[in-house]
Amino acid sequence: MDNLLVLALKSVSKKYKYINEEIEILKKIDLEVYQGDLIAVVGPSGVGKTTLLNLMGTLDQPTGGEIYFLGKKIDYSQEDALLQIRKKIGFVFQLHHLLPEFTVLENVILPGLIANLKKEECKTKAENLLKKLGIFHRKDHKPSTLSGGERQRTAIARALFLNPVVVLADEPTGNLDPVSSEEVINAFLTLNQEFNTAVVMVTHNWELAKRMKKIFLLKNGFLVKWERGTF
Ligand SMILES: Nc1ncnc2c1ncn2[C@@H]1O[C@H](COP(=O)(O)OP(=O)(O)OP(=O)(O)O)[C@@H](O)[C@H]1O
Ligand SMILES: [Mg+2]
Image (cartoon, rainbow, N blue to C red; front, side, top):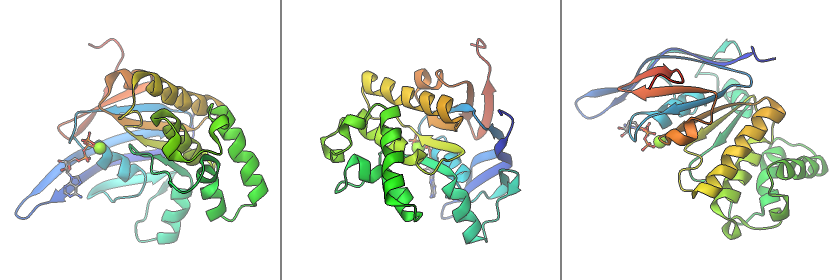
């Protein structure tokens, strides 16, 4: 089932106001994300990648255009509906945002506990995810004792916990060495294959982007599809 349209951006613009001027960071962007998609958005620092990802995750509102989630137009005045949408989206940030006082297992379980799921079920599910992502042996460790790649894989497991239809990742290998980056990329590829979760990754790392199936370039506010072999 690769044709379920998860996210659709239609002519989405974003302007930021400064004291006397407005700057349009994103200009009439169209983008469709289908179930099982592996998408990279590439662009240099400051071009608007995080802005775009925040819009896709409903963490911010566009100043023009519309965004549809699973076929329904996002209505920013409906807080409850926004919360329901966010439950179906997994977020992986550049800095992992793990809670330092909790173990790996507890960090992964947390979204389940917040959603009032049974603790035992949560534990089994979290353990299975940690096994899939190759960090089960670290389950009782605190984040501070993990490598950067292990932390990011823990963050990925946590983002997957509530079975999101899409995972949005912001520079997920930004601070990692090549070996850890490879582990993190493999974790994304695994979750994509095993659960058919769509992945949208924003990055300035071209090598990372090339591992995704579709690549878009963000330049001067415009999003352009990059076809392999074009340059
Ligand atoms: N809340 C805000 N108010 C005003 N300007 C903002 C705001 N957030 C971002 N910007 C500006 O919008 C532009 C794009 O920012 P954004 O964080 O999306 O870039 P980015 O591509 O993610 O960069 P990086 O690769 O460094 O993370 C920048 O010039 C930034 O200063
Ligand atoms: Mg950014």
